[in-house]
Image 1 (cartoon, rainbow, N blue to C red):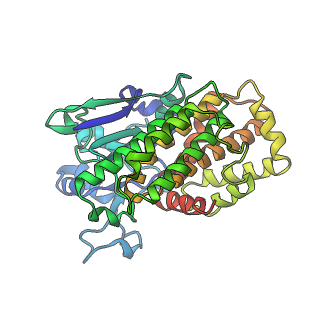
Image 2 (cartoon, helix red, strand yellow):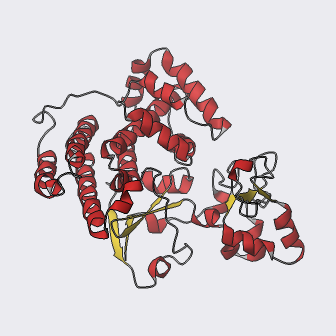
Image 3 (tube, rainbow, N blue to C red):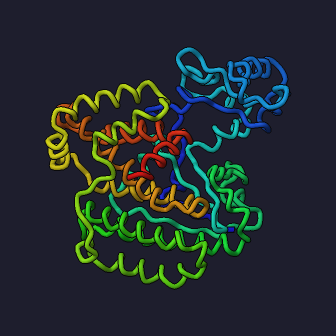
Length: 403
């Protein structure tokens, strides 16, 4: 068994009460089945407190999520009026941990901000950017992000990270029905091609001899050409073996100008990007305020604001490179199941461009200043809005499929 992780993954530790944000406030905290069964039988006063603060989907008025007679309903903690988890104490610490130990936490609390995806015989883990400490590690250094691959022992993930669940695996996309029609060999063979495309994309995105805009154009163009080959794969299973190595080498070696790629074309114009964001479900009221402030600030003269931002001493192009690498690492594996590679590349560029828009507005609203704290807050709010909602991810991908 292999594990693939970003180079800074091992450095992550929850900062607890020192965190500038708090993942125990404003989040819906689902309780997994095993933990729920455990909580039902915790004795004493604290056990009574646990059970008094749990609710099912039916209790919350959402009967559609209840299976059968409600015994298997989705369960969560009943948040307080201010959105706080009922077990978050005034010191910013978890009363469940203090009373029962870390092993008593429900799965979502144990895993976050870790994200797991299995594909091509490898388990990949990343850190979600809604977490300030995960962000800090991502943007801490200007050196290119790299990834390491670790051979695990027979006992699986627990041999490497005892605090994480062995089977913490992301669900496949809803449209992965064709997977049942493949045998394991074909599945892993196709996944290896997606992996090779992703590695080529990393090389393109992190080639700092070229401006980032040119790298992005190369990245999108490579994915479009690779998608053309993928579209023929079902009728010609050997096409990727024959054609893909040469295609990847061409893009890694040549300039965008040689390939005849047009420069300066964003994935949707900025007004269209903001309109797409209006179609997302709102996860936090803070996001609504940020989006409205961004619209109001940029509407006057978008390109002047963008120029101010990109020519300021606070601007760091490497942060956007890191974002593109992050989205590529995390979301490209889904193409091994749904065949939609170009959609994943557009999603990565769209998200990065939206964050750039948010940065430009924040820079102006701050009186032309932008701190590392601003960097973390902007990315965290966007990640919270998009990456913690399957509906929002699917909505963005659907909108981008027509671009």
